[in-house]
Image 1 (cartoon, helix red, strand yellow):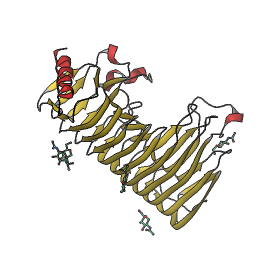
Image 2: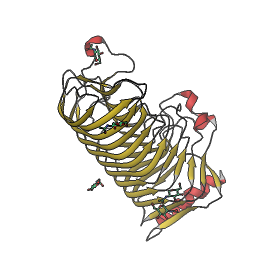
Image 3: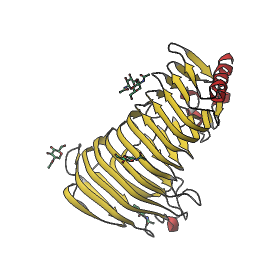
Image 4: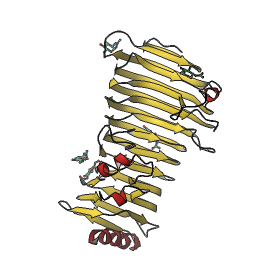
Length: 349
Ligand SMILES: *[C@@H]1O[C@H](CO)[C@@H](O)[C@H](O)[C@H]1NC(C)=O
Ligand SMILES: *[C@@H]1O[C@H](CO)[C@@H](O)[C@H](O)[C@H]1NC(C)=O
Ligand SMILES: *[C@@H]1O[C@H](CO)[C@@H](O)[C@H](O)[C@H]1NC(C)=O
Ligand SMILES: *[C@@H]1O[C@H](CO)[C@@H](O)[C@H](O)[C@H]1NC(C)=O
Ligand SMILES: *[C@@H]1O[C@H](CO)[C@@H](O)[C@H](O)[C@H]1NC(C)=O
């Protein structure tokens, strides 16, 4: 309890200080912190120097909730240090509730960088960025077991100008997930695995979702993940669009679905007449220089909507081998586009 007061009062001091301030979590320190909302606006640049460890409670009463640490309404935020967030997720994973705390949430945070820090064993997502602009994650490490539920590394929604680079993410769900309203997103030099890959979606779950566009994922590796480059939408009547997406120079190693568009997502089983009728339009997606190994024969899988076929899908220089021996194949349902350069598996576009 004492530590909770210390962190929130350090924040208030730094945030209220004219010209800005620093919140220091000293090295060698391990601080138990209960769920905390750190709010702005602040009077200047805020730095959080995370050299030590922040530890979330494993008490059952904190297994449910929106966040562990939430930072809101702040401009000019810099988080750096060699320290870590320890989410104590094992105490919350068995509940399987979708209302478990995000370890570190950014809401309406503009011009921010998160550098060098690590996040372990979040109860739900490790990091989530919502309604924010110009946020950079650089050299961030995410660690959680492959079977931990919904522990996405970094989730983005309704935000623009987000850069994620030089980061290593191994977790139980998506390494990075881009939800509705993700735009101008740059992802580069990310090592993903274990995990579910880098995903756009799920989209189309709710009415009035914002579009996703201008996304680049490049120079990254996927090791033992269930997906590589994935776009996923619900088979639902809610419309939106995904456009101008580039997957460039990605190395797959033992990945189940290296390239996949899945527009028939329907986890609680759809009525047959609703199957494959996603109203999310996917267009202008380029896959270039995607190489390495698939651990299933289907290395390229385009399952697009029957009512809004994918358009402008481009495959260029694809070399995906089946590590079980034999050839890889591709599947095209309701997709229009073109292929050039090397195509392994043979393109079905
Ligand atoms: C964090 O990383 C940057 C480079 O990304 C480096 O310049 C900086 O010194 C690092 N900070 C610490 C506290 O090590
Ligand atoms: C990245 O962060 C780690 C700590 O997690 C640190 O040891 C390393 O020096 C950082 N690398 C760079 C390039 O800053
Ligand atoms: C993404 O990276 C490219 C260069 O690689 C750069 O021109 C562009 O401004 C970046 N976008 C964002 C949102 O930072
Ligand atoms: C939906 O798509 C899947 C995969 O393309 C296919 O196996 C299934 O038969 C389709 N269902 C309907 C009702 O069209
Ligand atoms: C395709 O990849 C395999 C294994 O990674 C490699 O042996 C082969 O030379 C590549 N083919 C071409 C044409 O680059």
